[in-house]
Length: 98
Image 1 (cartoon, helix red, strand yellow):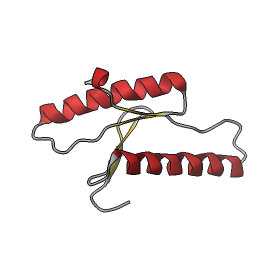
Image 2 (tube, one colour; image 1 turned 60 degrees about the horizontal axis):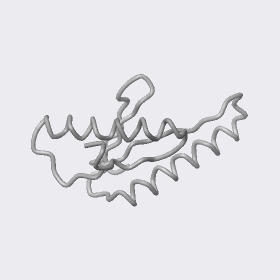
Image 3 (cartoon, helix red, strand yellow; image 1 turned 90 degrees about the horizontal axis):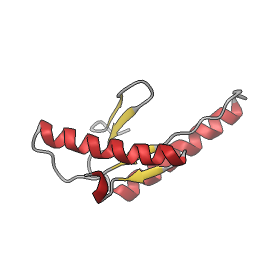
Image 4 (tube, one colour; image 1 turned 45 degrees about the vertical axis):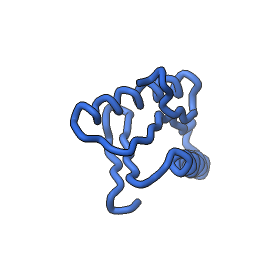
């Protein structure tokens, strides 16, 4: 991770990742890398369960207020729940999520 990136636990099993200066395609590539690494590590450790994750993803140029940030989180949360319904997917925020 770069110094300006943020990775925090956001809720029970939810995490928030912020990648400044990263476009959607770069973020999707990172999430694929992360998923592959987790699946590989789980396989190597012979865990009795599968590891995978779903993600909601958005790109923004600027946030000027707390309200902007909260609106962005709501839209990413909607994308996340679309991804969870399909299991193991990454869904980018769409107009219907705004």
